[in-house]
Length: 295
Image (cartoon, rainbow, N blue to C red; front, side):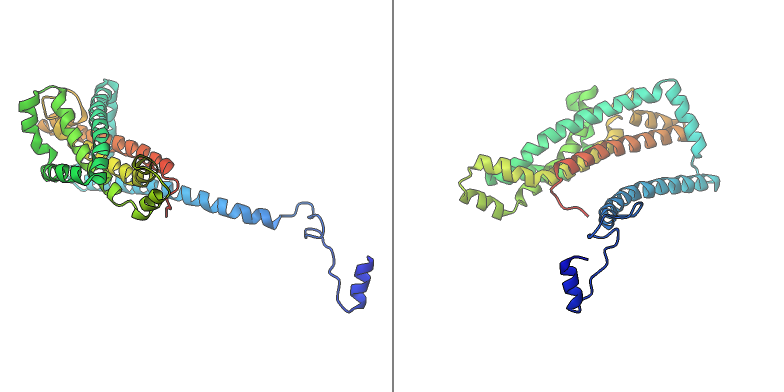
């Protein structure tokens, strides 16, 4: 016992014992550090939250297949899952499914890329300049009320029956969905941020690049996801225009022969491809908007 310890004991104050594992001494061999346990708890919690959606997704898919199988067994005019898997194997083996997927993906990708590339600058111009908004917005709202499928007859007459009208209809669907979202993103930018930048001497170009564009990015990416869904939804009708390949064409051809398994293969293929492309956009959204608070 040190001199200070002896004085404290004589003054009537008990002196705590130094036990292993406390701040007064090294932790005992094989013991657990409380600090490390506290640090690992949030990490385990985060990993658990990341894994839960995957588990729920798997359960949802399994339930969907079970309900589908039960309806087919109950006498509904539906092919059973094994029949669809068998038909998919046949279409993959003879190369038909691969060719159809490639043709449809090419049309959707080109139409979606062109639609997005046009929608983003138009949406920015509408939101930033009041004069251009007054000139462009009536036409955007006008064409929004017309389903892209209704444009098909006009597209065929004006553009012919090659790939151009198919891609144009998909382009229009993606453009109309994305331009409105981009426009809303610009007009909803907090005016306080813009005014603060002006007070600090920032010019319009700097404000646009450093304030408006970052603040509008979440809206743009949401619009792109909606536009992607619209592009895939328009695909089947677009491939009615004298197509010889594509998932929509294959489904329409199977309809003539009441070939339900082939129709289901086309439906599932479109759904899976659309889901995968949407996941890519979702990952990009999380990377580009990491500053945004999420639940």
